[in-house]
Image 1 (cartoon, chains in turn red, blue):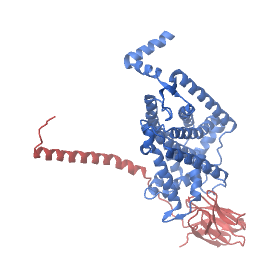
Image 2 (tube, chains in turn purple, blue; image 1 turned 60 degrees about the vertical axis):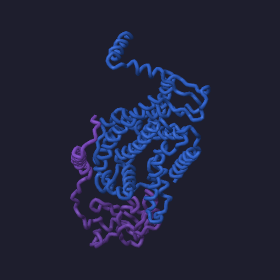
Image 3 (cartoon, helix red, strand yellow; image 1 turned 30 degrees about the horizontal axis):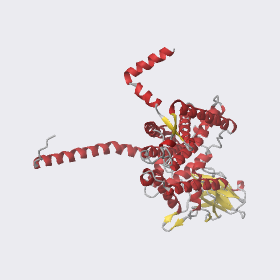
Image 4 (cartoon, one colour; image 1 turned 120 degrees about the vertical axis):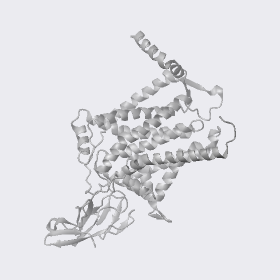
Length: 151
Length: 357
């Protein structure tokens, strides 16, 4: 290699080339990686926004029972209390995303995954759930039960 | 025939100089001492990996990914394909024994301090393979698309989503969307049969190359040259290895035949989580821990704290050769022994509690 000290001109030339080349490498990597990273993100599917669903007939739902209803892509739990009152909540446990169920023996809404419990107003009363279940509105028209989002 | 084989050997040797390698393997020795038995678990793990590759490829011949196909195709494998039940059961059982054997291998290396200089890279690649194994377990568990797998994946990915900052994008990346759907199944299938095996093979290659190149580590307590005993790697050690492999294969056959792996019920996103649902045993101790951490601690979410603690512990464990200076200098390090003992007892205790709960 050339042992002579570099002239200022040679130095600036070297620096210039360093910047251009490293900048080029970074730009190249960016151009390769950006599409790959973007590809990994799943596109948003156009979901049909559901605002209300028919949950069956009142005469078919016994007192002191619970049932999971499809609310768009999400599960909703419809409870009929011992007094015959109807209530509906999001069936997705607020803890870690499991689906809850009605437990006759406890008289509560229960999540099997981590033993989380909610009372029949959807309030988290025991176990790990951090929040109550979101409540939905239940309307009875004749014999039909309609569940809709609360405004 | 013999001369024919010799001619083939000479033909290859002339071109790639095989002789050096063969001489090297012939001169390799394995230390013999009272802890020698632990040397075999690396070999057993390797054998179980080979079984997983073979049975995995066989399952691929009939398995179909997809919400409407996965469960049905495994059902088909188990009920219609000749010996399909056997292949699938062996694959599931091997997965569990593999993780167990890798754990035993890891802890024995840890307590012998075999990770110390100059074997840091062997330890690191081993740990990376162990994490990949957990990934194999988690992704493979979902592939039959049954009820238990569906909720296990929901919970597992939801926990990943709790991690601050990177959690949410990671959750979407893992699930292929906001929810666990067929998109998640496709991704997990890809991870399980392509991404993870590819990475694993690279680390395994480095790991085995280093083991062959550096030989087996000797325990620290062997100092005197006169205490040293050894046996030739070939054929003495190899034959012992193979005998054990044969025993393991028998054990697998017994397990697969008498305790066939169940398929369970098909996943239904609109059914409640089944009672008694539990993660696989190798995740159980972490799971059980999360149950004991209160919902909120200081300014942190209980779960976030749990994940952070396990994350830090995992990292410290992985980089042990870089903070355990004493062992690298050939001195005793009791602290490492106590930490290792604590880890073993913690895992066993919490696994049992989780299992009984």
